[in-house]
Image: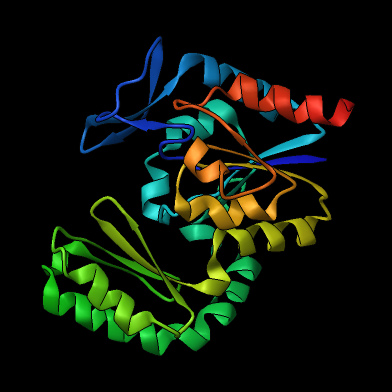
Length: 250
């Protein structure tokens, strides 16, 4: 069984702020407006991949459950079974949250709750409440343009085991045991899978990419990983799938 773990945003789907070449399809609506798109060819390739009995496509995203629900067109188009949300803390199986997985994630996150709650208080003192998103016990994040806030949060989290990651205006705080790499490890152990591949576009994805036998990423990320193949964006899923099977034939 082959598994392709995949980030979603700026990997499979792209924001309306980053227009794609060629034919595209809407995969997400927000407040009635078109939000995210996928290239038609990539959708066709992934649909074929998902249809195989000997392979799995598993989205692994930092999106929360509510944010993921906005991607119902993508879920319906591809028909994949599993999805890992909240950086891997939540597992969906056929659209239903796996309670045992979530309970294990809660145990892994338990030692970090004091720190996360303190960081939450810090964020609320520095940002508008509507910009602070509490997804405890798994993670929290803030949307901010305050140039000093990231350093304040990093200082508070230093040495605590809580990772601080930034993506544009969003600043995330996530317990290290809930990294994307740990999600890959837990998933592969649970289902007894050895052939693992991953694709992602940012530093958030490095633990996931590192945990798999073969990875695909932009050149600046691939340079950090010996088993990663550099790709240009927008990624060609045809190129990714071909590389997965080409490696097996060597």
